[in-house]
Amino acid sequence: MSDYAAFIKRQVASRLHRPDGTVETTRMPAVWTLAHRGYSGSGRLDVWVYPTKTEALREGAKLAMACGMDEDEQARQH
Image (cartoon, rainbow, N blue to C red; front, side):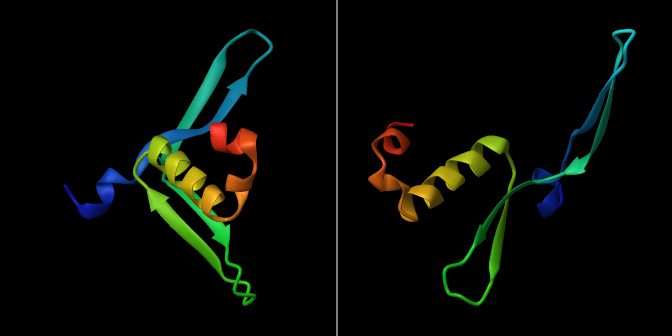
């Protein structure tokens, strides 16, 4: 298995719902990403790639807490 195969998976790219009730789903190669505009003032955009949605969401929550959301009680609980 190549190094990138764990990251690139076929994900739902679109879902077409027709009036007759049928649904057409298209899947395309995709990755889970997390993007964050840095605070350095240079306009830098950091982008990380994760192999699963769960990992991307977990790391996004950690980043949010590190960027000040830890001061919000409801955010900390979630």
